[in-house]
Length: 298
Image 1: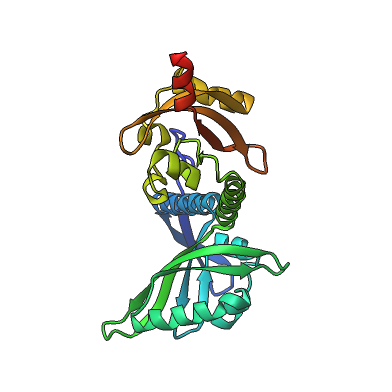
Image 2: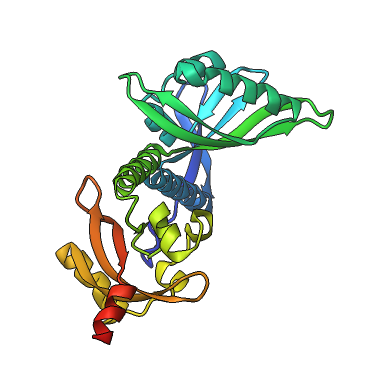
């Protein structure tokens, strides 16, 4: 209904009719209940549900629960999307297991038994199989609800589709292996590979020999901080040239582990991933300290 001032109110109306003995309407009466606040609360709840669904879709995170006694799972809309299933499907434990990769079903069953006993982990990774055969990598986190007696009644949790993350991790490992193979070929030369934050990813035996640091000491360190590098121009300019031109060559002064300064002829080459995006820098540093000193003495 609309009030004279234009405000819209929701009402719930009930009416009853009283008839005479001859069957004619004698009178009617009724009630009108203002339910505006209730309707507003219901709409606010629906809006929160829509926001939750959107947030889960964006993050590829769904939520679920499993009634132990009733053998029934309840999934959010995003859970069904991740598994590629129709949301009208009635889910039981066995039906869920059929959507788990055969190689991971034992992991699921063992985790469920441990959880019901109050033992073991509260998260795990496994592979889900969609009806079209597509395999998705997922990460689940969960907890068990219990009665006062300690009897497990329900499992509740979240599940995130981490397929793209796992693919990216695999690609990074493959790149490291390819770069490592290239470095092994050049093992006689001092070679290091660093990421775009200048953290050392690979440190070969040639680098160990010239600088004195073992691989375990160098990996993860920022290269120019470890070597106390003195560049012929600002390091940011050098890195930008590598990113723009794919390479840079020049002389750099480095410090060995024992503090001795060495001059190296440095070749820095940009490495890209399969999409052509910059991913790492391969650096070959040849010690020219003695030859440079000899030239200066002439």
